[in-house]
Length: 376
Image (cartoon, rainbow, N blue to C red):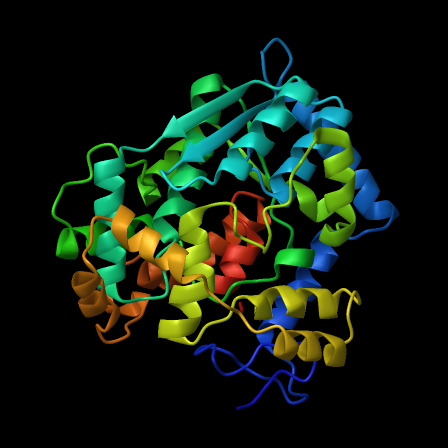
């Protein structure tokens, strides 16, 4: 199997492309993001301007930004720094029914110690459970897409309701890496189509996010989503003890283990059914940032294989209301991809030029353009 000559991304990614030097497109995306968010004087000035703009936009309002919180390292660190910079965030949490006790406690501790208001949006469990089962039946690696879309949607909708112009997210390409489109297609139309094909209930309350919503909240409400942590030289292992000391934050173990479903998804479903180990994106990001050598990362990856806890798998199956036989049948459905369903993918390809204009205007994220559309 061919592997990128610079990072750890390989041909388990169906759309991977290598240049003449054997370097993959995700390394080039990473380099482009470093150009957009440089850790130098230019980047410092851009960050200072962003903070000034956020404060200015929030004058006369209770909040000047919206920030998602999960109880994880990234969102907690982002919230801490926003407050220390003098911002007035409203913390927003999506409760999809799978929160771990530690994650919930981390959210409460952080908001209380930072004196930040918390709004929790609780999904209708029966409806959301059915959507999750539908995605398992769709048999693609996108089982977490409904949660990802719901989080994004709730943050943006709350911003619109509060008259807030900025959503500051806690994702950092320097530690998270860049997830391939074939591993995670964030697309509201995709959710609609999968639920229409496999669902037993209609989506009545699920906070989906469609093209019309993007246009409304961008151009009518003027909401901007900003990758806040991209402005930081963020090294996760160094942050954890700091958050523990400052906020009473508790480590819940491995990355993405703040909810039971993400444990099931990352440790069991992806590697066992789809042969996908998302640690490759994280290790690759650290290699590109010089935090690990390629040899060190590959050795650590090999020596610490992903293991799943059967108890978590059994708990997930039971909570979804499935029998083991029902789950086994669904699990053995042939593997498919988002391209087997209706999505916005072809539309984005068709309107490549106007979307590029939106990117240049700062109204469409360049990372999404690179992932969903590719090169100019």
